[in-house]
Amino acid sequence: MKFRTLQDNLRKILQERIERRELNGLRLARMTGFRQAHISNFLNRKRSLSMEGLDKVLQVQRLSVLDLLDPAEINKRASILPPSEDEFDNVLLVEGAVAAVQPLVQNQDVKEILKFKKTFLKRLRPHLYNSSRNGWSRFVMVKADARDAMAMAPRLLPGSTVLIDRHYNSLEPYRKGERNMYAVCKDNGCTVRYVEVAERTLVLRPHNQDFPIDVIQMEAGKSFAEYVIGRICHVAIET
View 1 (tube, rainbow, N blue to C red):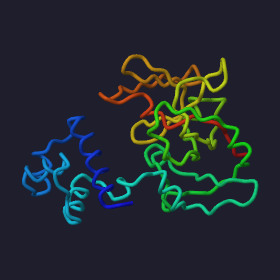
View 2 (cartoon, rainbow, N blue to C red):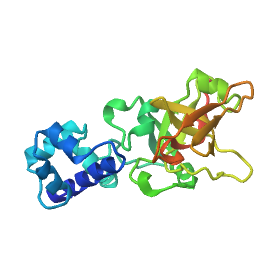
View 3 (spheres, helix red, strand yellow):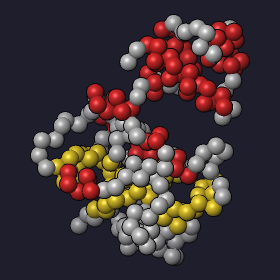
View 4 (cartoon, helix red, strand yellow):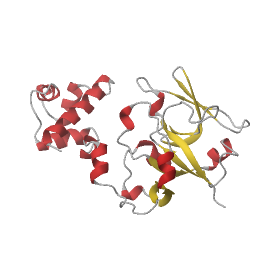
């Protein structure tokens, strides 16, 4: 990827933060020590940043060069999994917090590598609400915690491991007349529930009617799809 493309991608990220009122040119200038005119010219494509300047902006905005790369391109060039040459594909078991926010799983976050038949995974239909997840690695696995097991019993049991399709964040039923189980980002982690939307509230319903309903108030400018990690498409029970 060319250096110019990295700068264009950084501009896009900064402009999105400015539109969300998380940032402005004056604040960025103060954080980096640059003149405001310098930052303004960069944002308006009138000049570029030096390598040192780019590094400074990344540092104060808590970004890395990886955030400026196309995830799909990274997937093609640098997978942590070797290509599978048999009838099985490798799926990574990770913590819920990793499944919720990391488009690509890093080596240090892998707890275990599990195998699924390629024919099974290929049969699963994706349904993205928008294209922002296209570059995410599609399948990950998470071990459900005790609270989720109680809330979704008997569909989940203690020790259950769930396969998450992160390319399915639509609320459309996968099968007619059946409710989808979803992994949802909550409190910087992952919880498993049925999901409904009521205005700006995400309603997380349990399968166990004795268990309370949870709700998430969606932040301004965010859609439900940004909270839905993916559809639960397989449950494995330890025996």
